[in-house]
Length: 288
Image (tube, rainbow, N blue to C red):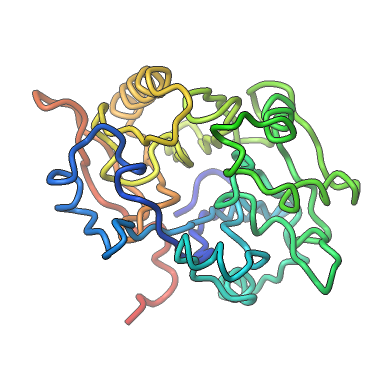
């Protein structure tokens, strides 16, 4: 897919699993297990799908997956499936290396989105993309530094403090255009000041949903994660964005859906539903 001056590519940053009940909140298991079958520990399989935007002057990565700093206990708990070369291998398909990335937009600092922002060598943790500038909302940065007891487990300081120490962090203050053709929208239901990129050339528009709508199963309004700090805020944010997505024929890209990269959305008697399923990158051969 190409939008304006950007080539759009999905980047496989590895897989993991989370508790199905937490992923689908008040939705009963007999409903969500039809499309998201759990394992014997009630965990559903999820992707960490990053977004790569390539123009003549920039190579932008949106989110970075879990990374490879997790210890064995943590990896087993969340069934993390990522190798040291997972992201570099995905980038190499486009002739890029981590050193070629110019900018990293972190939608928020939960471990499954920011874990791959840094890498560990011995006892030293450094930025994984050494020539990139990293963008985080200031308000969310403060949330990550001072989390509540409820969401403390979602943040790992090793994922983001080295960015500040290395001088590559840029804190943003509010939504708006970050680069030509790329706007950041702010959402506050899942966590404070989650920033989601909206890529548009006036004709074609793609929204990287992050954790507002983590999978295609979460398109219906009541399907909201138990992880969201303010689920009623999420409900209204979803309603507003989905109405616009239908009216303006946006493509929605999912970060955590293991099978579906992106979709269009319909609205009818049953509310919002998945329209057309879209494979974003048709330049590479399909995986066997």
